[in-house]
Length: 470
Ligand code: ADP
Image 1 (cartoon, rainbow, N blue to C red):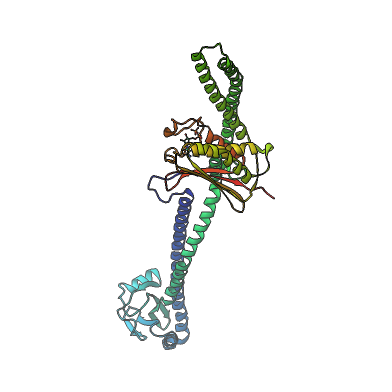
Image 2 (spheres, rainbow, N blue to C red):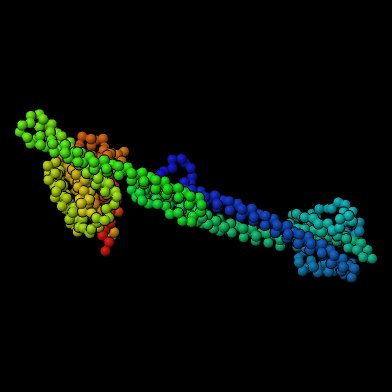
């Protein structure tokens, strides 16, 4: 599979989109929260200011109704009810000279107001923020005229902003709890959306992988996934259609050439055979005729293998039947025992249990034969070759192992290609078509074939085939 050589992180587009989505939505959440927080803080302060101005008006009414002492005793009651650390009153005469105040033990260090009288005359009630050492929270104060026929005074009311601070702290607490929950929700949502929107691309990739494994008929579904993905799927499918037409044309051409070559080759072979059998022919010509027959056989074998390969690649389903694979392997072992003995190789067959699959007998014989033939061919004298079968719930695995030199790492990805032969194998007879035919046969049986080098240096071919469905 693909590996990303650049050190960019994170690797998948889905993860990147998810992280971007989470980051942007979290930033928006924080921004909205900060704005909401500022709004709440301002509204609460305005509420306090309105209340303070209203209080000045109320106490003015009280001053008009009950006189200065009546109003002052009402103020004292308020201080007793709220606590002198929370509420403070101070009375000035009309010139701004302090006359009396409620307990100021918690209200020391009140800053003096310059031009108080003229500012009140010009602008009405004067509001100020207070940061006093003895107050745990910020406080707010208002100065305003109270007047009646009996005189003009200035009243200062100061109160702590504790309640506002508590509300704001609660809001901050809600933010701290909701932020991780929001991040989790947006990460999950982002992941879901990214995966959903990229599932079309995943499908194109999966189809491309299947096709590279031989399933040339696969196509991507063009279902409702958004215009971009649908266009990608449609383009990909039409490209595949064109490639398939081209491949089909090329195969037909090769098949036709192969067919057309068969009869002249058979005639040449026939002529060479006649020369070989004739007593009147010179011995050197007879030798030549022998070589011609050998070459013709090699070419005919090559042509037949190519035609078999085309047949297997076109699909073998019409010629499939339920068959005993183990019996087939045992027969092949018996047949190749002779070749193994001649080559000085010990051939072992471990497939006692009968296994049934749906398959094409003739082609499965070719498959087993090719693997055993290669194993014997590429293993030196004195070596060992074994074939064993193992069964699981849904498939049967056939392992063909040898103690030869194995396959070079750089050859492994290519040995199933048509006509590919490893460098070390050139001295051995062969066409380079055996393993491509093996792979085509396995694919036609909906199975898989793979190869590995074993620890002691030989090669191990593994074929997996689905069992006969009951
Ligand atoms: P060939 O006619 O060359 O044997 P194949 O298609 O059967 O063609 O095999 C392709 C190549 O794979 C061979 O040329 C050889 O390099 C390698 N090969 C196949 N089987 C074995 C094996 N059992 N041990 C080592 N190499 C092998």
